[in-house]
Amino acid sequence: MFRPGGLSYMRIPAPDPARAAEFYPAVFGWKVRPGSASFEDGTGHVIGHFMPDLPVAGEAGVVPYIYVQDIDETLHKVRNAGGKVSTEPYPEGDLWVAMTADPAGNAIGVWQHGPRLAER
Image 1 (cartoon, rainbow, N blue to C red):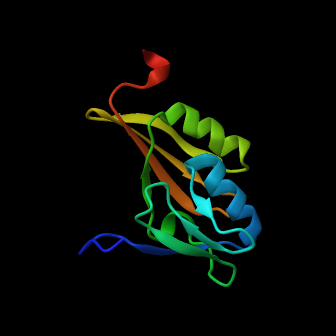
Image 2 (image 1 turned 45 degrees about the vertical axis):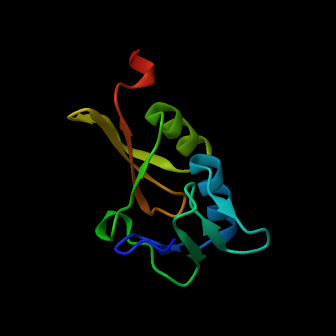
């Protein structure tokens, strides 16, 4: 976590922290402390809290982009966990990028390097 200039802490707006605590582990493999609104991302480099008192900004706020190994599988997980896919995967050089939203409406970009597994 101690990386100069590196993102290390996030407060995620979550009107229903329990729902957020189910979504992020199901989709991105994050760890949530039992009985808590605190989380650790899939790398262990970012910690934070789901905050019921922060307004959801959607795409008008800061939009994090999360690296995933299989963008199509991740979008399936997003939909199954109550989130939405607002922009289907599109190429950016040798990357694939898509826009999603968690159940509260927070915008989350996802991206994958290399060819999509669905196209192999």
